[in-house]
Picture: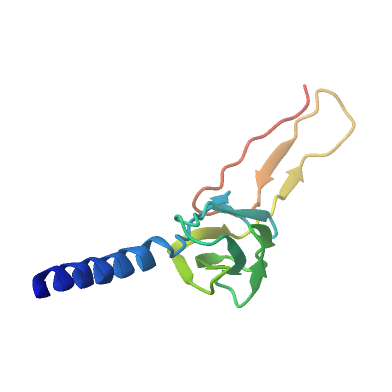
Length: 149
C-alpha cells in the first residue's frame, strides 16, 4: 500500500509542477515598422497567450527610451535616433507574469534634410541652370530629382 501512496503523491507533485507551468502566460509581440525616422509612429501589438491559464489582464511596455506604455496594443513615437530594446510584461488574473525582451528591436534613423542650391537663374532663353544637392547624406539616404517636365 505504501508504494501506491508514493505513486499517488508523485502524480500529485508532477501535476502541480506541470499545472503551474501551463498556467503561466507567454508574452510576445509584433512591431510595425521596426525601422523608421525620428517622430514616426511605431505600433506595438501583443500576440501573447494565456497558455491555458487565467486571462491576461495587464500589459506593460518598456520602449527602451525611458518611457512606458500599457494595453494590448499601443504606439510610441521616438524623438531621438538610435536602436532600442523593447520589453513587454504580461500578467494574468492570478498575478503570474511573463516578459518578452527583444534586444535592438527598433531602429530610429535621423530625419533627412532636403536642400539644394541653384546657380544660373535668369530670364534669357535658352536658360541654363545648375542644381547642387546639399541634402543630408548617410546610409539608407538617396536623392531623386524631379524637375516637373
